[in-house]
Length: 294
Image 1 (cartoon, rainbow, N blue to C red):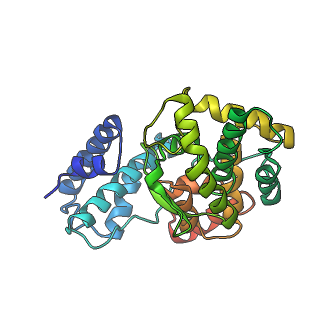
Image 2: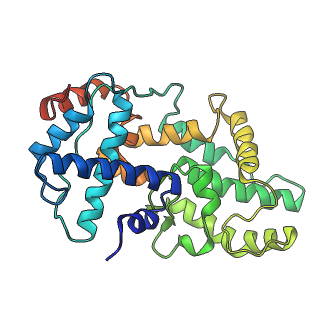
Image 3: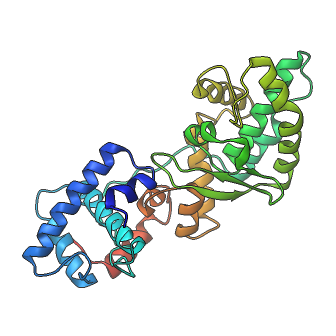
C-alpha cells in the first residue's frame, strides 16, 4: 500500500509542502487519540470540534485554513487507499480569511478580441512570421483556457488531442492536471502550427525536444513579449496573471465553483473563491449558515 508521502508525490507536491503536510497530519492524529477517535473513524461533528481547536484565539484564519487543507488532503489519501469512503470536511471553509479582490479585469469579448487582433500574416521576415503564429497559439491558450506561464512551458506535443478537440494540461507543483476543450478556430490554428510552423521553428533554433513550444530563451521572456503586443490591442492588458484572473472570473459567471476549480486546475476550492466578485458576501453567508465556525 502506498504511503501518504507517496500519495503526495504522485500529486506533484513539493518536498517542502509534503513535509509540512506530514507534520500537520501527525498533529491531527495526536488530537484524535486524545479525543478517543482516529482519522479513519472520525465523523463530521468531531471534525468540527477539531477545527474549533485549531481556531483557538490568536490563530490567523489563513493559518487555520492552511491546516484544514492539509487534513482534507489526508482524508483524500485515506479514500485513495480505501480506508475511508468520504472526506468529512471537503466542503468546509473557515470564514474570515482575507481574500483578494481582482480589479481591472477584461470582459469575455475583450479577451476574444486579443486573440482575433493578433497579427500573423503581414510580416515580411519569415522567421518572425513563424514566431508570431506560435505567439498567437499561445495567446489562445491564455485567453480561452486560462493557462499560466508554468503550464504553457510544460506542454508537450503529445498533450494535443486534436482529434478530440482538446488539450491535456499536466499537473504542476501548484496545480492539478485537467483536460480542456479547444475552440474550433484554435484547432485549425494548431493543425497548421503542429504540421508546418513547429518543424520550421525547431530547425531554426536547433531544438528538437518534444515540447509544444520549444524556445531558446526563458519562457517568461516569451510571455512578456506577447503581453507587450497584446497591450497595443487593449491598454487594459497588464500581464498573463491578470488575463488568467479575467478568464477565471468570467468562468464563474457561467459555471459552478467545482467546474471552475477543475478548469483552472486549482488544488483547493478556496483558490477559486478568491476570484469571486459580487457574490463574495453571498458565499460567506452560505458558509455561515451551513458551517457556523467563529
